[in-house]
Amino acid sequence: MINLSIIIPIYNEEESILKLYQELKKVLSNLDMQYEIIAVNDGSDDNSYRVLKKISQNDNAFKVVNFRKNFGQTAAISAGIDISKGEIIIPIDADLENKPEDIPNLLNKLNEGYDIVSGWRKHRWKESFFTRRLTSYIANLLISKIVGLKLHDYGCTMKAYKRDVIKDIKFYGDMHRFIPAYAMWYGAKIAEIPIDHEPRQYGESKYGIGRTFRVLLDILTVKFLTDYLNRPMHFFGRIGFWLFFFSFLSGISALCLKVFLGISLILTPLPLLTVFLIVIGIQFILMGFLAEILIRTYYESQNKPIYLIKNKINF
Ligand code: UDP
Ligand code: MG
Image (cartoon, rainbow, N blue to C red):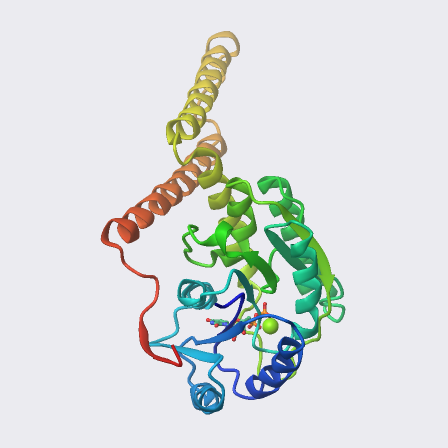
């Protein structure tokens, strides 16, 4: 019986894998637990798969899931979770940014009676304050406020989960960082501890500044899905009523100006433009929500997986 599953999403990390494996082994063999390490090769173009295969030949506890193509970090983690057996699940980045030595700390905290213990890379991004540290700080603050769960580092892959609380959560897009938010919604108890962190040594980050915007959009979706999924009309309807209200106000004031002051409605195009842009913006956001719902129907009604596995080793 396996107690602990370590899950590693891997996209072009050939230089880091072996070192990570050795560090993991050192830590895991000192724990009194039955463990498995599941490496998910997310369509790497480099030698990652060959390195993984080699390791798996000498170690039965090291299992490999090989994707057909690059499906993204969320899909990789999700596949690892689906296929894992452990009661406790800990995903960890492949690039040696997370330190396996923190695993015992996460486990100890979990044993205090939590369902999820989230890692917090307290000293991350010291080098690039404005592009990384500040944006990450603001994003985490925003997520905490909106979701109602205060975490310093939603983006940290390294978190310890009890299987019970995440087995029913479905993953989409880039959403792995919101697992705690969904879990909280289902009543999970969540804690956070600072963990060690080292800047990436080999290869480069698979994400750029564009991620910030994607995360901000994801926050809106999470908020919408947790608060309004089973009563969307309260959401759409409220916006609708406010729009009616403002259009009533603007209509009345336009009429008043015309009737009492004789000011023509068409003296400047600016009011029209403003209204036009706002309306379109709102339409876009609302359509985004509709699309989110549709995409869920699409996947769930047809039981489509968000990833495709080419082969597996040691299962
Ligand atoms: N990753 C992945 N698929 C992707 C992008 C990333 O499996 O499409 C893995 C990557 O190999 C690494 C982890 O996800 O193990 C985190 O990626 P990265 O280090 O680039 O993110 P950052 O640390 O910059 O947030
Ligand atoms: Mg990294």
